[in-house]
Length: 431
Image 1 (cartoon, rainbow, N blue to C red):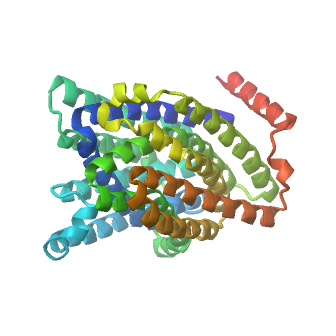
Image 2 (cartoon, rainbow, N blue to C red; image 1 turned 180 degrees about the horizontal axis):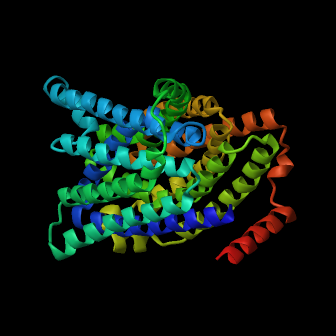
Image 3 (cartoon, rainbow, N blue to C red; image 1 turned 90 degrees about the horizontal axis):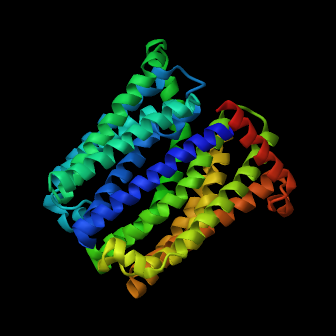
């Protein structure tokens, strides 16, 4: 397990470094307004992906070891095409009838780029989910590494060798990265699909939807908690504020990858076996690891002087450190939230995540409409921290009630240290 965690974490750390380089390039060359447009494009893709994930998301991971692969992948392909056809219809009619509302969500001139990028991204993530469900974490990490490498190389070539320093240049880089990831993912799962039968796909799809509906409703609320503030911020403060806040969020995203990497392996491990006590103890140990590593990384980020941020990202981003500080409680809460969510989804109870994310969503709506008009992007960051903290508190009490876990069990002790040492030794022997 430690091999998978370190392998995934290593890939994610490299991804965070690449994203940091891309962030520096984009903010320096496009400014806060240009980066604001990119933030909104990525957000629009994310929202569409949430709907697609009803059939092509975490349910695919859960059912990969329980159903033939073709019965999962082929309906997912059909669902992707159906949802994007609906979006194409909305793209045609909405700008004519509700232009202000539509362009608040999708930047004008980028409507069809959102469509085609979502198409590539959805196929890519479907293939990734199959690999994760098969616990082929090494293969997933290798393909993901190629994907992010294509992205950063394309961005650097476009901006500094070809001199095409525009938002569209970054969009074209996304096309290449998503396309490469999707193609390699398909090649990796093709043998599994080839040997499986499509017969019975309707029953499988019903099971996937029944599982996926609750899970995706939870994810929609979770992403809503993370991103709805961006639209409210654009409404009250404009694109430049969105770009500045988006840069702060992206910097802290690197820290969130710690919990996500650990949770990825946790979910895969829990979903593939039925021991409740194993799942409980694994969650407690991985929670401690996630929080400690995230806290150390967060403190290092906060120690960087504001003047350094200005030198790196230019004067448009002088308040980046304030945004990071306001996001800090939320970053720690998200590290815990990710582990709890991996536990509840892994034992087949995604409804728990739905309930706690609903709490966070209500907190987001209440806090955002009060804090953002008053404090702008700092208000958006504080809103995120309040929302994530409320969700993780709810998860903690539900976990405690279901498992009988004592508060003292969450405190790091010698057994945790010995467990970590033994896992590292196993990793060293393997490598």
